[in-house]
Length: 216
Image (cartoon, rainbow, N blue to C red):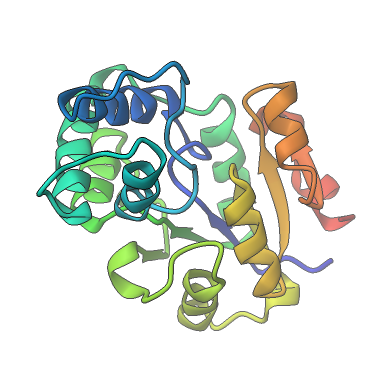
């Protein structure tokens, strides 16, 4: 395939931070009287606010707080953990090679702009992306394809000339509904099975190069 642009998800894809989001959701759930056993109580890929109606129902939570308020509480807990978060292994080398080949780079995240901006500033990624799309720009979050359709429109690129990197089942579904091929980034073997709908699944960015991607 001819690749003119690559779109990246942020959390769990560029960043190794699902543990931190798991902790953040866990802290807020504990304050609501819920004791959890899972490492990741959240559903990845759908955004923090969209998680809360599901969690309220799952744990039968009684609260006067709206999902928007609980999402803000969760984000505040997450930001406290920002110093311990890292970029995925091999990402910076991979992105340098992509940009050297004249391929446009975009970010499409279900996170909010205020949190995304703090992340980009911390990791000095502000100038990395040609285009950034956050949850404020969409009506329907992943697995709806809207965020990728909007990003494609901003890029001025057809879906067949684009590639997406994602770490969640919902993100993969969103990209494929938009007509874009997807590379899944897996944490472990169990996670890789969850991402099996992707066109290719890897564990590290160092496992791939543009030649491999051109042959997808």
